[in-house]
Length: 118
Length: 107
Image (cartoon, rainbow over all chains, first blue to last red):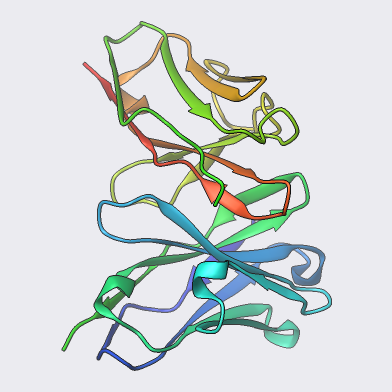
């Protein structure tokens, strides 16, 4: 069965970077895209960007352009999301979610809580 | 930037129909999708391509998209259907957008 397993919770200082991983199993990793979506406490879901796991091409939300980087390691069937220059407003649960063209976010990771605090 | 607008809350009694709307200017050209999120859990896809139901989603969940408004209907809502519901779509530039979410209460 399809599973997306994310790395554990992180606590970071303002100005630092965080790297969240998402290990996929149960399907051919390179035939789907992987998106990253975050949710601040009590807030809406917010799309951050995505990677074509086959060719590595990426697209980012304008809001995070310059601060976010999404990569993948096909040998490990794992996608990564790095967010830099962290500020308190980046405190949120970060999700990876699998997608294909007309079936976005059909499977989600369990979420990774990132807390930014001095 | 593109926005999808949902009512903040909807409340129904068990067995009644719950309708959650989502309005957006690009919806006549783009599919709407719906996700259910229960407290402390990851979202779950309940409707895709406006009106299709993934396997495992009960038949009481249905969707429609007419002009600039998409609607999620839960016919005969159950207590276990409580949670937050988010619509999602893209705009004509390929930006991915979620609505603000609607809290469904069934009591």
